Image (cartoon, rainbow, N blue to C red; front, side, top):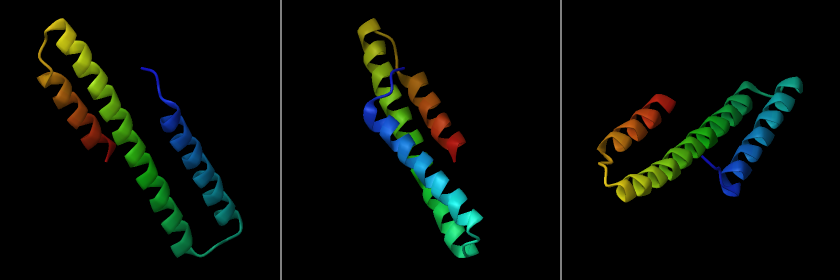
Length: 86
């Protein structure tokens, strides 16, 4: 699967958030602030995972329709991926 630049940019932003998190820990910032940053990172990862799954699902469904196959199994797999990511 090819990943579009917007997805790659999201991952780069997450990488920056994680670096910021490490800096906060090294600077011994308050627990509340560190956990807030961790939550932001987790939410960003969750949204990015959902975007990747949805883009992949759309691509696979298009391919299946061209081949005349059912996309029911693909939808189930996508839902399982999203559930597993949480």
